[in-house]
Length: 348
Image (tube, rainbow, N blue to C red; front, side, top):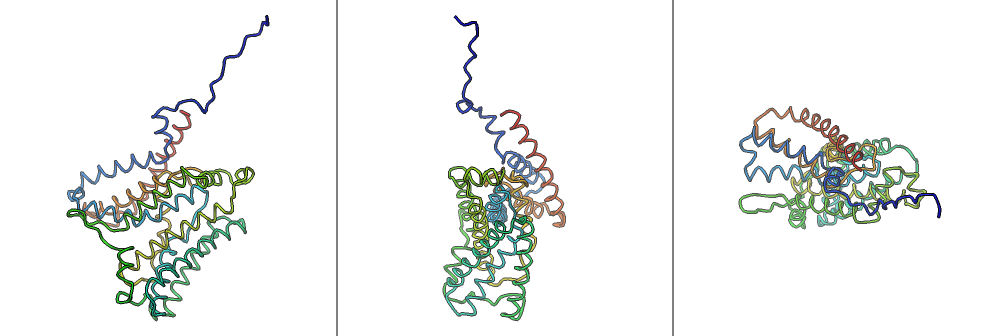
């Protein structure tokens, strides 16, 4: 009989049950949900009209316009990259649809489809340049941002003679395009913009991709460590180009909403919006360094933006304070998200 004592059996960590609290602490959007609840309670107290049903529709609209772009931007950030051209790409998409339809005297749907192809090409260009040159996405997309800003203004003035496009509201197909991209739905006495449905759909698709598909695993892998992901067979180039195509597709949707909401487009719009998309994603739990975050978190970040931008109006404060609140929320959310992540790692 051997004198050695048999080591106790070790339970496979894959079979260990995770407590609901540990799962909750591990969610990247936990900090943003807490922040959203705090913002909601704050404006519910200081602004009497904030809790009115009509106000809710307005808040959701403001959140949806941002959230449509924040969802794919969040996926891109999880993949470890940025897109500083996203804001002006929205305007480019709208300008292409409007000017092509007007100049070619075509059905506006022709311009819409041409805009889709060109906008996707811009996204593919960003992804291709990033993966081929190995330059930081900050530099690549900053260059695209500057080029698109110049093209938007230059082509609009060259074709239209002014800084805005010509009205296309009387052209064939405008009404059906308006119904798809810019219509208003009435539920009871509350009006909801169709962008809310686009927002929900994009967040649902992005969440499904992240949590239920192989491509979602690739996104987390390339965001965590691209070289290690490549070593185990992850198609890093294809994944990053796909993420930029996702941002471009959302920019196309947002651009068509811009066009069919107002009939004309100002060529200088969109500058600075790219930072707001990134802020919504960061508030929602995405890390600047990549590899961590969620699409649902970006939706919560966009909702906080909507509540703050409209809550200040309902409270009858000077809207100049909005940027202060946005910056404060960014810092507080980042600190809270870092604390939540440390707690999650400590309990894992």
